[in-house]
Length: 184
Image (cartoon, rainbow, N blue to C red; front, side):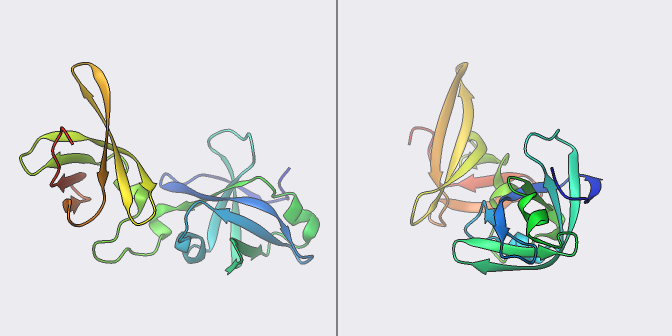
């Protein structure tokens, strides 16, 4: 059961960015396990939306964040709405959402993974290779995992998301152009 927080609907552009793991200290701080190795969205937004474990898709609570900072392998945060350790413990397991509109602006040739999912991928010859289903961090590079259908069968392709293969990412057109062949 979450402490007495303001009920709210998830924003239309809400993105899940982490999960509350536990209380931290005695003054109401809590640990957040971010879903990203670079959790800037947690730092840039002063308004988080929490969803209790097992809650319906739109049932959420608004949490005004006073401070969030890195600590070891997680993020620790505090809120005026969470006055003590007991209230922080009640948040355990809650999913953390942040409006996409409050993410920091990406730099040139930088993209949030969430913005790439669903984009159509074509090669230089205009052949459709598939739609980005997910991205994988494979150590030195990120890989686009594409889903397509050919001859009535599901096909999966993987394309390294590096400049030698990616010619252009056009977010408004929802299109990625690559130097890659269907038979790779």
